Length: 168
Image 1: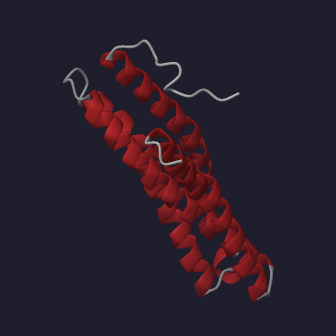
Image 2: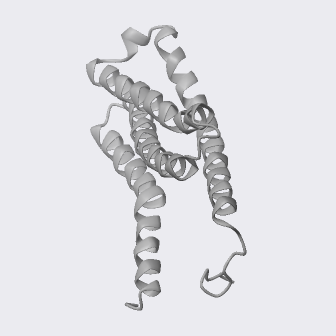
């Protein structure tokens, strides 16, 4: 069963709505941040593992840097709204914080998708000799992240906004 917001409007004030939206965003960031931190921690240890330089060629090192900086950027994006909230606390800027947090979340998701793709490709590249395995990894991971995180919700958003305006 789906709930249509037009059928059952929430009985909340603007202030309550902003509080709810901010809490929903921050809860989502808690989930994403945990995954990013595990990936980032793993990537921080990789260069110190035995024979990293011997096992990883120039392509592998480039993939490693893309994965590392992608994870760092994702961490920054997912953590930024928390610190901004602390600094702007009680300045009546919650609507601004929610807009910024949403943008940071989308940017963080893109960075995380890049980092996951580069990390997975690096591992496949190090473990196999075939370029086909690497291409398959990139395509599959990018397609999965792209579809599940961006394309599918975007299509749902377009469909929902069309339905709300009477187009569909």
